Structure formats: C-alpha cells, structure tokens
Length: 304
Image 1 (cartoon, helix red, strand yellow):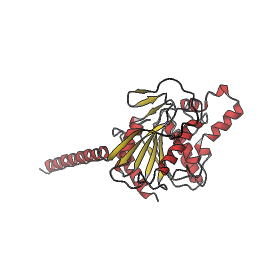
Image 2 (cartoon, rainbow, N blue to C red):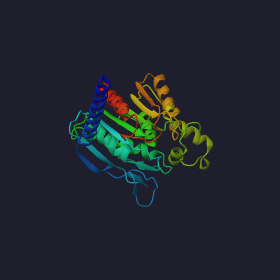
Image 3 (cartoon, rainbow, N blue to C red):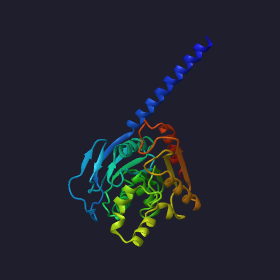
Image 4 (tube, helix red, strand yellow):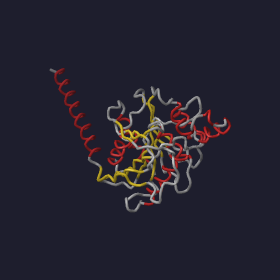
C-alpha cells in the first residue's frame, strides 16, 4: 500500500510539473502586447552597402538569406519593466536564424517584462564594418525612442547567438558614448577569430578570405575583431551560456571571453551545460532550457 501511495504521489508531481511547464510556455506566448514588423533601421538612408545583390530569401525555420536591407521587429511586452534588449540571431554571417534565435527569445524576454528588438542586420559579405554599424544604430534607435516605448535608456542591452554572438561580443567591447550596451548576453558565441578558436565560416564571411589580404593587415583585423583581446574596464556585465559538446564553435571561445572579463574585474557569469551541441537558441526542447532561462531571468533581475 505504501508503494502504491508513493507511485501515485509521483504521478501527481509529474502532472503538476507538466501543468507548470505548460503554463510557463503559455505565459511566454501570451506576454507580447504587439509586434512592430519590418521597421526601418536607418530613417535617413543606409550609410554603406554590403555589396550583396539579388533578392533576400526566407528558408525553412525563418532563416533569412542575402540580407541587405537592415531593419528590425519590435516586440512590446504587456507588462513593461523598462528594460530592453536587442537580439542578434546567428547564421555564420551568411544568414539569420530569426526563428529560434530571434522570434522565440523576443517572446521570452517579453514574458520577463523586457522590450525586445530582433535586429535583421546585414550580412557583411567581406564588409566587416557593416554588421556592427547596424547594431550600433539599433542601440541608438532604442534609446531615441525610449520615452515612446517606455524604456529606460540606461537599461538597454544586447544578446547574440553564435555569429550573432560574435557581433554582440564585438558590440560589447567596441562602442562610443551613444552605443555602449548596459549589459550583454552571449549564447554559444563566436568570440575569437584566431586560427585556434575561430569558426572559419564566420571569420571568412566577416573579414573576407585571408589569401586576398596582406598577412600583417589580416592579423591586425583578427585581433581587432576578437572580443577577448579588447575587454576594458568600461565593458558592461556579461552573461555567457553554451554546451560543453559544441562541435561547431569551440567552447574555449566562451571561456576565453570569461577569463578576459575577470582579468578586468567585469561582472560576468558563465554557464556550461553538459550537452546540447550548438544552435539550441530558446527552443524548449533543449534539455537544460529551464536551467538556462531560470538563470538568465535571475541574472537580469539582479542587474542594477
């Protein structure tokens, strides 16, 4: 009889856990007040070209290819905390994974009372300055519209995934007074462009092929666009998450960034999950989704 009661209790607990998970998923999906789609990033015209020709195309999973028109989608939460985040989807600087690394995280941030902007930044196509220019402009746009969107201009952060994590990490260390992010979230990010750690596709798409450039100049660019080599005392707080078995972007990218942050006494938090590989984004199918989102929510609430 005692065993039966224990089994029944376990079943009840499983059912309750399932209900909580379902409620949590429902909360995320119903936390957005409205979405402003296809908003122009540069009101006075895009300042420079990435040289891409042909039409932009969308493939399965909201993967946007040949992006040459910078724009954003703004997700406005029903309950607003005043905090805002700009989302940089990954895709190796070849496309944007705007579903699980764009739309899904935006809705999750809304569930935390955070206004979210999914940035459709342009592919560099060897024009290395273009993605960062788009990110900097997105930060300016967020702050310029702070009053209208009920945002605290001193609580604007960035998040990036994979190559989008490289863009976000670059924006974390390269900025001026108007474009400094107040916090940064890096998910399985490309950090270093050195031969030992680089994701070759991301590096080549950003900088162009090495054999087309002077070696000394190329080495300087590698150093300039490796965020771990450019952390300063003014770098904002950083949250990093990845999986130990990531075969696409070496995990040492994240640990190198964490070590560089700690060397400068920058507040930083590092989460390495045992498995999951690369590219899990905000998919609930990720084994450690609950741990990941709980830690991130707590970290965001603890920010000043």
